[in-house]
Amino acid sequence: MLSMLSSYRELFDSPSHRRVILALASTYMLVQVARFPVALSIPSIAEYFDISIATASWIVVAELLALGSTVFLAARLGDKYGHNRIFFIGVLVTTLGAGLAGFSQSFSELVVYRGLQGLGAALITGNSNAILAANFPPEKRAKAFALPITGARIGTFLGLIVFALFLHFVSWRLIFYSFIPLGAIALLTSWPMLKSGMQERPVAKVSLDLIGALIFVSTVGVLIASGMHLHEGEESFTSSDAVGYHLPMHLLFFALAALFVVLQTRAKNPFMDFNLFRYKHFTMAIFSNTTFHFSMLAITTLVPVLVERGFGLGPLFVLYVLLPHQSVGLVVPIVAGWYYDRYQPRLMRPISMTLIALGIFLMGTFSSSVPFWLIPLLLAPTSIGSSIFNTINNALIMNSLPNEHRGFASGMIETTRQIGHTLGATVAASALGLALPATIAFLAPAESQDFYIRGLQFSAFTVVSFIMLGAFVSFYHRPILYPQSAR
Image (tube, rainbow, N blue to C red):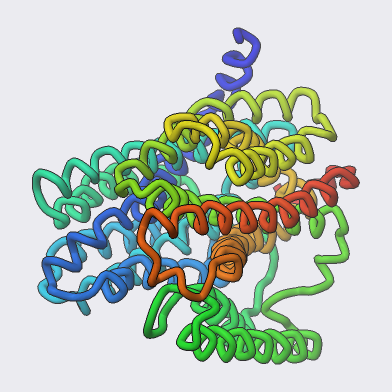
């Protein structure tokens, strides 16, 4: 324990290191609070504006679309103009969007400001990994990544509790007002980092391919939208309404992706340099990152179904299952980052992914045969595995490319995070829908619960197979550290 604490104190051994850690921890908290906990406000917002729950969910959709589609562009802008500058602009934009959202007089205004929040979050997260890589050597990066990731978990943990109280006793507007002091703190902690980086030079000469950037943003945006239920009828991937929406969206995504690849391979200065994927250690780690975030959204998709449809309980019981899952992330990343930097264990990543798969397997297999209050224990391996993997895999990705490409690596971490989220939610929900009978809507709640439990088991097993594929890839991954040529 003393050795670990001493090791973390070394991260604060200079004013520049302290500035970076404080800035990133506070902004990660701001970004994370603006994401998952805000979903709690959907029913209250629907009632306030007299709209449907499906329409109110656009406050989440707008933020996710803006964030996921522009985060790689944000990283490339950081390469061109300086990561510290773009990062600080992101903090400003996020804080402004959140404050304006609280004062929205119409639902349309609220959606626009939530999109502005998502754009700001993209500018922050797209450049944060590159900032860490620029300030900490490879042998300290797992510990350095652990601190902002822990800050994000604190944001989710507190947001779930505090926002639930706001909604119950005050107003949904207070949720967005609370972002203003959080944003002010993030601005104060980021300002010294911005000043110190005013003389920051881009790590490489960057010429942005604007057409390529536009097509890529559109491609990722369509992919994310294809995994959302922006259609009439039930939230399903198998109903007639759903097929009429999702299938064309998937086809449009493949068409845009093919167009992007063709144009980029012919471009003199491509927006995305495919040659960097020849670094096999980088590509393998990026693939594992996608499967990891696949599992995270699969959990947040399946747990509400298990609780509300399988056990017939209310949304507050969903928090009972998810809060322990989030609380593990308050401690485990700190230990995992220290251990990885010190010993560089090759099996740490595949073991952590196997733990994620084990927890989902246990939930799918035994959730119907144990008391409800034991469900968080079934998910415990997943909670531990995810808290280990996220920290060390981010560090490994940033260590797998030469330092002059740290913006590319940072952008790919966050882009594959969003792609993994989309695929995880889509596959989990699709597998669940295929396992349910077509007449499920006409069954009494007591009759339908057994079907939902069995559907969840099938969906969980499907998700586990994808996660184990990522574990298999990480097992054969022997990372190397490239010379960090652009200090």
